[in-house]
Length: 456
Image (cartoon, rainbow, N blue to C red; front, side, top):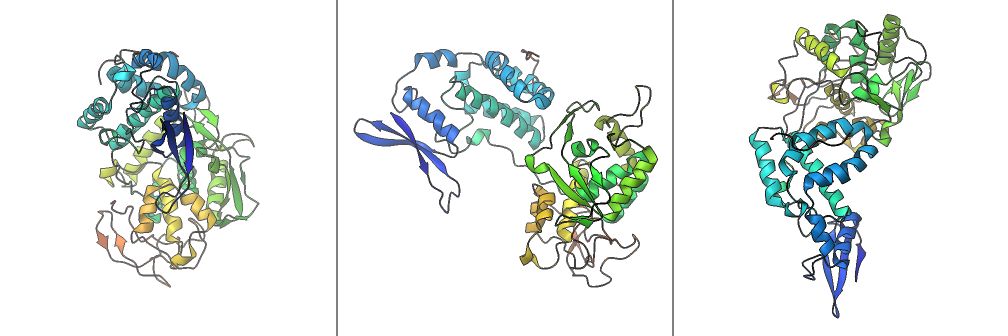
C-alpha cells in the first residue's frame, strides 16, 4: 500500500510538496518527496504495481510496454492525442519531432532510454552549435513525450528526471541562456519609424509605446481602440484606451494564421493610450482606411489578392531595409541584431526608467503588468539601471520633449550610463521620457534522415 502525504511549505521550500509513503512489513518508508502531485502520483502507482526497485518485483505488462519502440509510441499514441489539444502548435511541433527526435530515438525501445543516451544527443546538438534556446526547446519537447509515456504506464519514470524526482539528471539539464539585453533610445526609435515604409510606421510606434506582442498587434481591429475614453492604467495615462482580447497564431509566418486568445489569460487586458499613440492610430487610419471591424494593420495586397493579415516573413524584409536605412543594422551583433520583439523590451525598459528615484514605492500595477516576464527587465532592476526624475507621466510615450532636447537639463538624477558598445559611460539622467533615455540600447548580461513521419 502506498499513499501521498502533503509536505507544507517551509522557508527553504515556499511551495507545497508531496511525499510518497509505503509500508514495508511493519515499517513505514518514504519513496521520496516530489515538487508536483503528478510526479508523486506516478511514483505511488509504480509502487502499487510493484514496478520499482524498492520491492524488486517486475510487472510483466510494464515490461511489454517498455519494449515498445519510441517512434511507434509517438506516432500511434502520443501525437494523435497531443495535436488535437494544441492545434495552433501542431505545425512547429511536428517539424521538431520529425527533424531531431524521431531520427535519434525512433528505433529505441522506451525502456532502453536513459540519461546517458539523451545526454549524448544533447551533446551532439551543442557540437552542431545550435543555440541554447534551441537545445532547451528540444529537451523540453522530449520531456513532454516521456512524461506522457509515464502517465500512459509505458515507463515507471522519465529518464530525464533523477530517481529522487529532484530535478533533471546532470546530463539532461537545460543549457544556460544569456539574457537578451536589446532596447532602443527614443532617438533610435524615431529614426526607425522615419525609415520604415509609411504603411508600417504606426505598427512600429504602437509596438514600442504599448509593449504589445506581434500576434496581438496584427489581430487588432478598429473596434478595439477607443480614442475618446480616457484611462489611467497605472503605467500610462492618456485620452484613449485599447482592448486586447485576441492574437494571431501563425507558426508558418504566411499571413494565414489562426485567431486565438492572447498568449496568457493575463494577456486579456485594457491598456491606456497616450496622445502620441492615439495620433499614430488616427494617422494610420487616414492612410489605409478600414471599416469598424477591419484589421488595423494589414498588408498592402498585390498579385495574390487584396490586403490581409501581415505575414511576418514579408514584414521581415521591410524591417531589415528600415534598420539599414536608420543605421541600426550594425548594432547588437551578438544578439543577431534588433528584432521586432525588442520593441516590447523597449517599452518595459522605458517604464522602469520612469519609475522615479524612490525605489521604495515599487512599480504601479499597470507598469508591473506591462513589464513582467522579461529577463532583461529583471536584470536591469537588479543592476544599476537608468532611472528618471519624478515629473511627468508614468509610462512611455506621453508629453515628450522634442527629440533635439538634451536629457537631464532640469531636475534629472545623475546615473551611470551604458553605451552601445556595452561599456559604462557618464552622462545626465532622464527628466522624462520625452528626452533621450540614459542608455543606448542594452545592459551587459550577467540529425539524421527522418525515419518516421507523424500522421496528419
